[in-house]
Length: 394
Image (tube, rainbow, N blue to C red; front, top):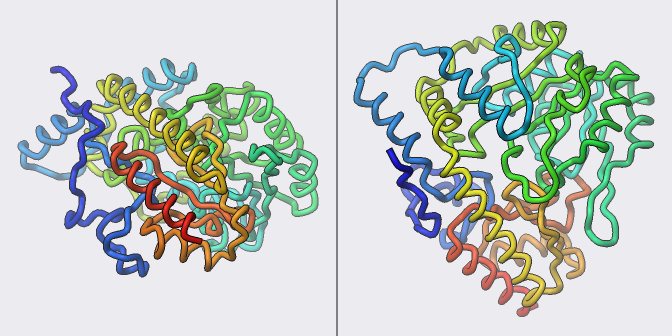
């Protein structure tokens, strides 16, 4: 069977389908005609291999408890070996309904109520949520943004925060959402060595690992052999293949000393088997989705290049550095000198866009907006024109 769904320019109407991205603007006081480029799912139809796998399951007509067999693991193993040169062991695999769920389980497994957990803001906002909602304390080793808009880790502050706050757990975003950094092997080794030295477990969210345009993604546990003893690597096909709604993630934990307490928390939460449709979709995606993935990757990079060129040429008051990874652009509006409320007014009311406000990623995100570029080019063109007109109208 040949891949059928390679027309990424095709606009598919997602309204009135229960779609979180399009159908619930009234809940967030967003105008009905606002263009949604916020939550991180794609506006592209999935691989036809995934569709066929789901059709076959639907036609079978029995939707009881399912689990994964050897074919599932083989597809997973092959994908990580081919794309990330990382060989996984079946004993490492713990399946969860999502990466955020896994982050929460890790917080509960490796820390106690009142403990501090280290993150690097501005970062994906559930990182803070899973800490505070579990009655732990957020400590941020805030990323440094230089004059060119590039982000770096402050390693001296990183180690100081670990020592001062008795940190046991670090939540790493790799590649980083929202700033788009693909951490180098040297950067990962620097933080990894510090964590080894101070006996800190590292939960590495690598859900965006397959979207890299500059540099190379390094699985944290594969950077050094010793890191396997401190690593929980969170992966999922959801971003890569646009199947977030099917609720399937693959968490890789080489160390039994970490894996056992992690699994115990999952059992305490009452969770067992994956969604049956998610199992079928994941195996089809990793086993047969290569052509679709390569097409999506190329198309999205083209969108990001287009965004960068358009903003530089038509909205120079806004700065965009092309992300090294993810399909999310991190736009810097600070030169406009607006308050958070004024920036929201500009984006939502004047431009008619539904984006993710930078402030939700932590104080270091104030003055920024996150834009999802995984959409047909015509939608992106329309959004950028709206933004240009709104800025010119200030």
